[in-house]
Image (tube, rainbow over all chains, first blue to last red; front, side, top):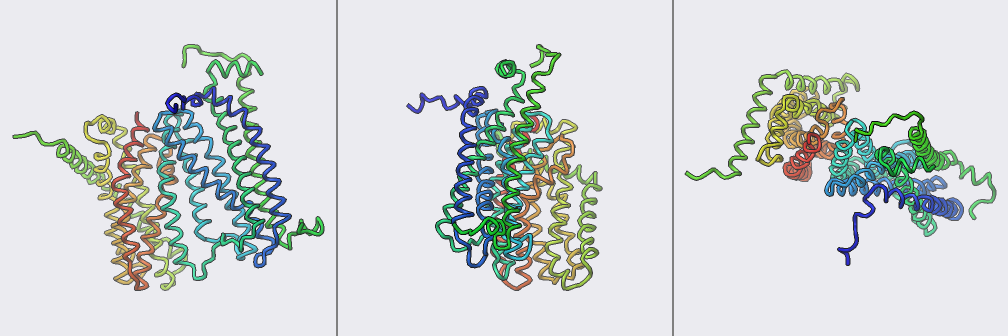
Length: 247
Length: 60
Length: 231
């Protein structure tokens, strides 16, 4: 039965375009609803933290963004692998579409982390293992995008960037592990920015809901970007032309 | 609810600029990303509907 | 007399590549010496920048020398494929019957011999400038000997991806520097540990493990990258 399913049905850009088009709007709505619920819980219901006061509420942005930055990188590497292994154009386009969103998530994580650090630890930047790894992750994203932009041939650019994504994903655990080692050996008082306050249930719930909200948003945005990439690359094809003339 | 009034909510125990700075930045990024996608699509539409478009059918 | 096995033939081809690349590097000594001078100059800039306090310098020396070595290695990465690309030798390599990863490991070895190895050997001069103890100097050279091959290995992947691309050298740096972070960290931590009198076994074995993994995986990745770039 599994053999009868055409796994590559949606690998055709045209079909993917149609499918993605139908699920993007619902995803945005879901993201908005989840974000509203998450913010109500996180800002309104979760209690004040004994040690960190109100500033801890930044975790409702920082932690979901950090999670997404990592999830998106893994997804980017996954589709890069699929694209290279099966020579699938669409998979590579999807990987290409994931990068900017992932980089922006990393940026949100870094900025929110910095703003959390100032009232909590007194400085706008803390070289703790998590933040430092986030910074390196940002460099990995930027490397991916810069490499893609520098190569003129679209196909070569896709595949080269895909390879660097794969090399990167293998290195991310190594980088994280080495940075953690570096951090614990250098900090006398282990200042971990993300040592969360004793997690009360509303806090955890708020974080989870915000994480889901970020996830829904990210999927929607990436699908939207993939559709644009498809339109740009297949601009000469008949189905795209008829799409434009119909509108 | 934690907050007795809106002004307390905005003040966030004195740490308002950090909390709202972080939330605001995240919101700004989201808005920027959505706007950028809109603009990209608009550019595509404009290019596709450009009048007097000469198409070289022999090129693939 | 039986036919030599394909492995022997392949190894002979690799050796030929190593010798060829070394011969070219010797002919163009200025490439290697320029990287060496860069290494020395960059490392010397830091005391000028942070002040001559010997205590401070002794503490930051391992990090500085290592970062300078990273940068100097990266400068020389362009050499690995650029010349062969422009004269067509690279395409010949791709068409060869021998496994490409194996051939590339030859090029990477030659690259290390003409860059990383030289940096490791000249590092004691910098150690002198920073007033490092003999033990620390020894540790510095040892970590560089273990770490610089990794710089060549990982750097080759970056070089392969950017063959013929405009602005390749800066691009390679952006791609490859984040990947160098673990090597940098463990290299410096080993020296710091030896300074503090604690065992360096953990850091050194991690470096060795990364080197072993890199020796196997990097040529594979570089070969894939080269095929993406050229075919």
